Each structure stands twice: as C-alpha cells, then as structure tokens.
Image (cartoon, rainbow, N blue to C red; front, side):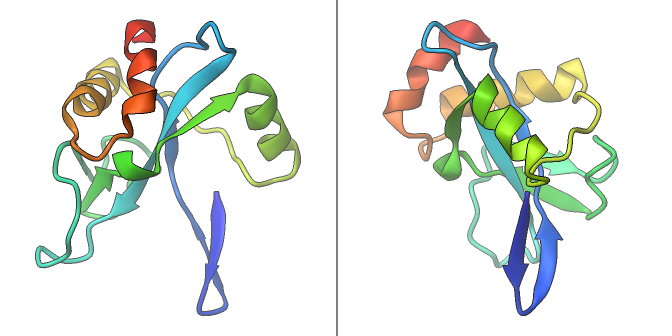
Length: 119
C-alpha cells in the first residue's frame, strides 16, 4: 500500500494471516519499520531484514493495532486500483509467528479473535 508523507510515496507491507472465513473476510496485518529502539511499537512480533523480499530495513514489527478484515473483493479492488501489489507468500515460520503474535498482542482488537479459528 502506498501512502504520502512529505510529498514522497512509501510502500507498506500488509500480510494476510488467515484463510477466508465464514464472513468472507481474512485477517490482514500491516507491517512497519522500527526506526530506532526509542520508538514506541508493539514488540509482539518482530520481523527481520530478509525474512521476506519486501523487508529491506533491519527491523520491522507487526502493527496489530491497525489490523483489518478484508474480503477477497476488497483485496482485488485494491490490486486493480494499484493500491496493492502482490508479493511472494511469507514463509511458514513467519506466518506462524504472525498468527501467534495476533493471539498474544494486547493491541489487536477483540473483534478479530474470531479469525483465530481460521489459522
């Protein structure tokens, strides 16, 4: 996803961590860079440079506080409008860490716990 900041465009990684559920939605978790150790961030799931081709900075974190439940149509619309670019799947290990982080993060909205059965 692209966002503008100071006139520049930045891409952000978002990872689908569940199957499509009964409500035809999947749990999607954004990822953000850790710029300094003094930065406030959810340390439930840390992602390291190289764990995925998109991760080029030394450390990033799963932003469970900004999780979304998106339908396949939502994802297709984002891709069609060039607001979503598909990359390769994350590794099984990283996916499991992200899912475990969703279960443990104090920042994930309780409404999203219904997707845990779809892990």
